[in-house]
Image (tube, rainbow, N blue to C red):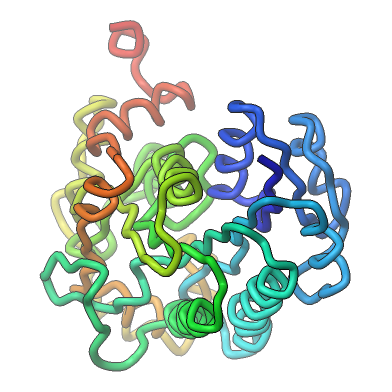
Length: 331
């Protein structure tokens, strides 16, 4: 199979490309610059220079391909207002261009990578694919990904043979996302208090998400949506698992949200000191007592998707990064 992939230089997209190449598929990857695609080139991928605004490059990359995986997106919560337009253009406009080009090119199978984040705050519920979001958007990322999800559904209605997948929160070796930063802060002793301990996520190992995307490519029914999340958890539970694996002591107390709210006027400065994004108001709105919980029952039933449990996944991550104590790493 020859697959055109966007986002191949990213964390999830990179894992997708590695798994596709490992099983012998040809991969054509859209990359902003050849330098960014060096690792993909080493895997034997064909590189197409261009970005999500470059319709010519997107169409050229799809020529002769059997399938498309659109995984590229800008992900950050807590961005300043000045960055909203570029996020909108990448997440919504990019999806319109990639999926629109796939429809024009009569690509046989398309996978669009959405997120469980489009559901917004599930208010303690563990929801499924049928859930309709309620209330206002908590972040620009959530808003733009919801809009992009609607673009995918619209084009499916116009005949695009597309499967939508919704990953949960991601982690794994080399993770530079907010989850990875949080775990690094704890392991480096820079977390005296836990920020947003009750924030609910479905933490998923990156290789499991990548495997779920490829299962959707192989087995997913066009027009269907599949949640490919991991187990339901909270920030506190994740920190406690890492603490148990590494022998470190987890903080007992939470970082007071009221204190963070009081510091929002100087958010850029505080964010830099605390390793947080500059827009503290948006960060707090999308994390304070919020749950992004969903189940993967449909993907398990129809695709055979089986993510690892959180303890096994976090242990494998810590071991791969050399962060387990020597006696336990060898056990």
